[in-house]
Image (cartoon, rainbow over all chains, first blue to last red; front, side):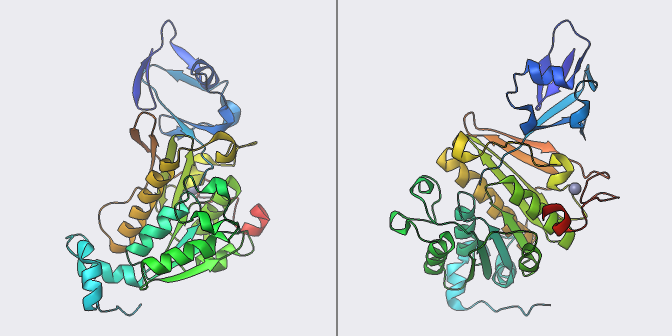
Length: 69
Length: 263
Ligand SMILES: [Zn+2]
């Protein structure tokens, strides 16, 4: 499937769907708790990362928490 | 309605480069001289914000910080100098601001913002800039500004990265619409590091938003999160939406009192 991840096209071989948790793992996001995930413009509830599925042509944004000032 | 000031000859000269801008002009400069902006934090983001707003002739600039200047601040917090070590940050910054522009009334608040004092302070101002260095304050500023209906700029930096969004409460997405709750065990600059100039890059974007808001020039960075990575110099504007289920600006808010939520 092909998705847009953080504004860039991304081809993920041999799958037709992937959970949000799976994508975070594949992208090696070291601290998932420091990311808010937006799927097709909607914020995904933290508790549903394992059963929220990303499919072909979906748009995913990782919004990182930044505490510094 | 605030009474407009008339620009003096000296002010015409000082602000000539603003006045030349069609979108600002003498009228916009008068708006700036009548405006009040509060800058939360006098560190990496607060320094450029305070200095640029002061240089621009924002009539009243409030600065809030309880800390003193530490030697590790000087790599990026450009309002402070080596001989300011151990001084209150707000005093150190206020001195530079007053020297920069005597037109500006600088109001230093040496305190920690909390649920009990923030509302009273922000209501004195037309626009608030968040330059704080922790999530508790960032969420507090968001909630207090949303509840009081005061427009503000959110800002955050980490390592080579920065993010900012402008919020018009009740009209555009707030910080909580997307970020919901502070993360557990957050990583801050003191542990993760920050490239000094990144603070300037992000802080000056926030200052530009404040100047645009006051003068009405341009279009604001609303319903979007501007993020950049200085390591690659990629900038991106992520569209955001106001959420009807937002805990503070949504249809059935669960946060209606600062004391209850931030107490
Ligand atoms: Zn909201």
